[in-house]
Image (cartoon, rainbow, N blue to C red; front, side, top):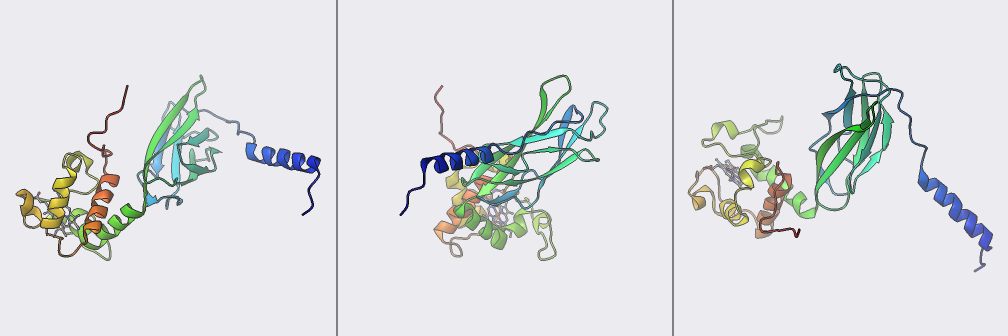
Length: 238
Ligand code: HEC
């Protein structure tokens, strides 16, 4: 193998360094006072994937009207955006694609627009990444649970939720489900509502689902909870 002269290596490194600095930052042509979500928050997608829907954000002025030419910048731990900066279009909006990182769980999108007097207006959106176990749990949910636990009907499936009394909760209902322990939820999924003194309309799945599938659907329930589920007993030092 022939060694490259050191000058070639150095200039190659310099070119690579320049490429990483990216395009120059955009300059705003106008300023707003507020940034709002049009759509794209609270999506579920596989770890590492691009969210199925783009993020659509709008900048408004003090009069509440959309502002054209305002700068929107995006950041968030573990997230990648395309593009990371954009000026709002004639309807005051930007459309941006977001890609999730490789850890399952919550991701926070932070969108920012500078204000004319200094400082900036910000907006936080939550997105959820499903790892392997949560994806298995979602498949279990889609096959067995969703017809009773989701109020929405689709062309393929009619929701049964409104026919049930007491009505089951949506798995996103963290306000209710976060208060129930893993042990109680597992027990109820395996042995049905009566195992916890609840409605027999909640079926028992111990004969249908493997323990790993019950664990997976529980993991899915914990991951989609809104507000987010906090693992009990986890204490942070000061
Ligand atoms: C035939 C309808 C039906 C199906 C299918 C069903 N459930 Fe339920 N589920 C219920 C009802 C009704 C309740 C409420 C029981 C009560 O509060 O007395 C319930 C309650 C629950 C609860 C307690 C929290 C709540 O919503 O009140 C969990 C957890 C749960 N179900 C998980 C599951 C899982 C996981 C599946 C799929 C593997 C599933 N359910 C499938 C009807 C159903």
